[in-house]
Amino acid sequence: MRAAWPAIRNILKAWALLLGLCAALGALGWWIDGLRVALVFGFGGLLVGFGSYWYSDRIVLGMVGARELTSGEAPPLQTIVEKLSLRARVVKPRLYVIPDSYPRALSVGRSPSSSSIAISTGLIGAPSPAELEGIVAHEIAHIRNRDVLVQTTVVVLAGSLVEFSRIGGWLSRALLYVLGPIAASFTHLMLSPRREFEADRLAAGLCESPHGLADALIGLDQASELVEFHASPATEPLYTINPFAEEGLAKLFVTHPPVGERVRRLRDLDPGWREKLRAA
Image (cartoon, helix red, strand yellow):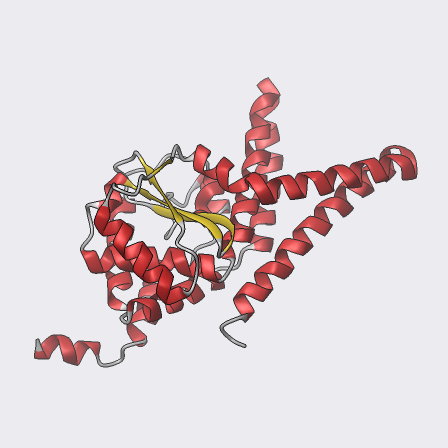
């Protein structure tokens, strides 16, 4: 039951998100002109919700400029994904590459049978095989737990609110001060840092060792300190770690727990690792 609970929780969150959107738009319609407009607005919320369900993954992949990998590209990565997908008992995700030297990875989709993983060119060749396997396993864990169902939709909706502020002309800064915190509050309401701990734990099991992912998290954290990352801060929940400097608007969207705490928990899954290292 424990293994199934994250997936059940995310399905419930997805339904709560859909019903909440319909209720909010319906209430707005009621305030504008009574029951008839409330029904129209509520139905519009239903259409938006189902549209987000079917197209959010494509929107996110478009936001990050990803393109799909062909079956002949990056054979080692293809092998890792296929092996881990079999272990996780999920359909092999579609693979995308982000033409960017900044090392990052993300997963998007609707279900364990309809998801995608995108990895930047800077990550494909940078880490050791064990570290790359750990990162891929972490993203597959998000797919198996159905985190992608909620993450993808939340990022699109929150990102839309942030981008909406740009149409305000001279009012854009004022709109950003209003819509930015609303989008961030919505993100934190739907996404808990606990999902990262659970994905780390499952990834360690898929890799049969927690240390590849732990080393990869340290490497990604060091890269984030050396290179400034530019993207919509609303995309923060998608990545393996938070790649943004925690300042300004980006500080509001931080949903990842500290890397040090994640590494400590991963190491604790193998209490004798220090003795093994000394013996080697």
